[in-house]
Length: 448
Image 1 (cartoon, one colour):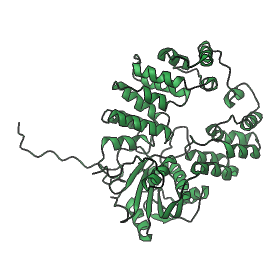
Image 2 (cartoon, one colour):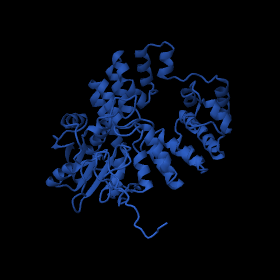
Image 3 (cartoon, one colour):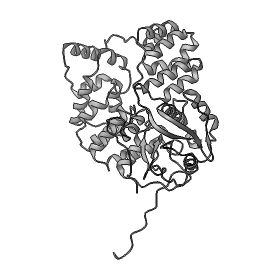
Image 4 (cartoon, helix red, strand yellow):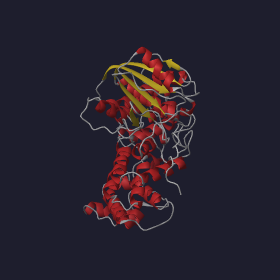
């Protein structure tokens, strides 16, 4: 065997549309695969299974502490529920102590059962000791109402989790609640599902639950169509939207609700803007560039959703536009268009009207923005460019916000790369510019 030979050339990674992509490390690749991932959901170019398999494989290449940090960020900052559980499952398979991680990322009772379903996806096997400890710690966080709300007749039940993790109640009240859970005698929770399954009037049920503050933000948004159909008073809905907690709602959910209740767009818009309460303005002139290429429209964010990546990008654009002191907005595919100075849902409308649904000439858009000058350039995209991408203008700040889970992308090098589609990306930008004393985790200068 000869050893005095050249090593074979490693093919340069490319986007799905052919542009040379950045070479990034396993840590950065895991982040970009996770932060905008609704687990098992197909995208324009990749299947949900392929993305999940890549995430699992990358977890074995990345240090456990980094995987855990990504899982926590995905759950708490990017508001994702299922993919953090997959990360915890892969760490458990590596015999990592996942007890602290599970206690942190499990924030709803049904995530306990979902984790066990993932644990046994390939075959049923005993639970690791740290898994039992983590599930037990998470179980103690939930009260009787929460347990009753998610106590469903599924393959894995909450009582199964309780038996397997051997959790110890924190007090006598919780011990009594767990006995009811085991016996199947937990009082039925006062939710819209329970009320309607019992034959209650839809209009009266929704009106009462909103008045009593018992309809959460996501349930409220998802049921707007039902409320409109059953003639629930607009004044009652508006009052609920004005006070409901929006901390765990992804911005694009408001766009989905507006499709079914256009007469309530102003109230939905105001609720969405509450994500920005207290946010400082980004000084100077910002160029905001939104990807309107075909792949942004080609696949829904989930099988149950009518929204696509462009809706997610539009929702982020609406929020970004609100925190910019001065902003010029562009939408691009093959061509680039400067859009009129709109805000809120009106900006969504003009972006959609201007998008061509064709190829992805990202560099053309960057040059158009550069010709007008800026202090900051923010690109919202799935990064599947036809063109090689240059850096931002000298002495300016540049950000690529990736709203997809594809393996390769172009927004690295001199760009600060941010993965995800929650309003938390604005925290990253402000922290990067020293506007808030908050740590930032981006993929800046990790590409070669």
